[in-house]
Length: 189
Picture: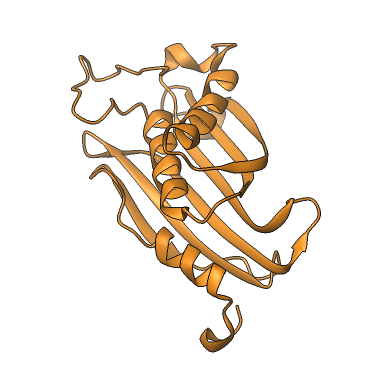
């Protein structure tokens, strides 16, 4: 990243908005080193999502800025995310999970009025079973969301709030103010 005096004002405002605290206590945010080769200016945060004291999801949100613009981005600022979460056994094989997981992102951005364009990404479901010398715990299942989008406004706090809401959905957290009925309760809202 360039020296602080050379940072474009639009990028500096976006970084300030992304440094805001997480909207709920189960999500812990922390600044991390940003990739340096993707754009002239970059900033990154990581998130850890806790449910009942256990880490159940995590992610990164990366802000990229190229003052010259980028044709594929349809703009000069891009947000990129990678989110991973553990899945309950009953969700691991659900054929609708990928489509639902994608709506966790788009609905969260829309609900927080985080205007965007050129959104794209992938949803990956994996299951792992250990054998032989690695035999051990029961099979595990994970969900991975990789996505990027171009904000079309200056309200980067809305994008952070939407991203945190998507993290909460991915981690199976109930909506704020709602208590889950069981340890494995999960909502597809």
